[in-house]
Length: 242
Image 1: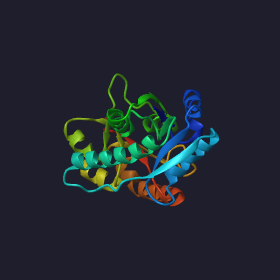
Image 2: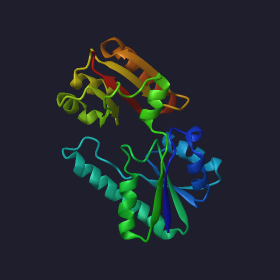
Image 3: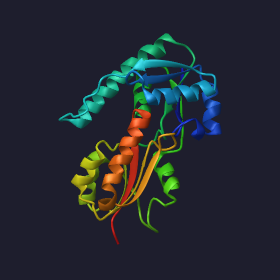
Image 4: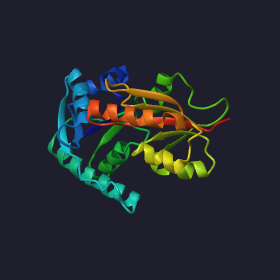
């Protein structure tokens, strides 16, 4: 039994030749269906169809989006996903592919889930990288993610305020949740922001500037992206003044 974890960037145009060759070797793609009319599932279908590979869907288990114990809630969700995928893998022979939005190394659970599956099943698996959202954000805005000789800190909106309080001054934020709420908690009105939503898709939106000056424009752009695609995934770089 073989599993291939394949980073596919933000759509068919970002699939590397290496990933394309691996995908064509798969017997099927295993994909979660979060809800009816799932736009991200449709994107995965388009990629699989372009390479002549069947898509087998599994209804994604329900997840507590506002838990008291975040880590425990994620662990429970992952365990439910493992069980759902295990049933399919036991029923089907051949090589299964998981198409990971962006790159598997950044804020994605697929590798952890496949690790758990490998504890239960005789699985051989590998991981191939894809173009990540921070990479594409930097390219779209024609910026380097960090000042000369300085680091960039990758984090989530949930952790943003704490990370800034700890002294981070150049931060790339993923898993953004409520953009307004995250920026309010962080207190970054005088910081610079480079923001993008639904990068690499037809509903892409981009904005940059001083946070306090572009807040209304950010809300409008985020609403446009969601209205156009039915979903919104955004990422942004924040940098302290000076």
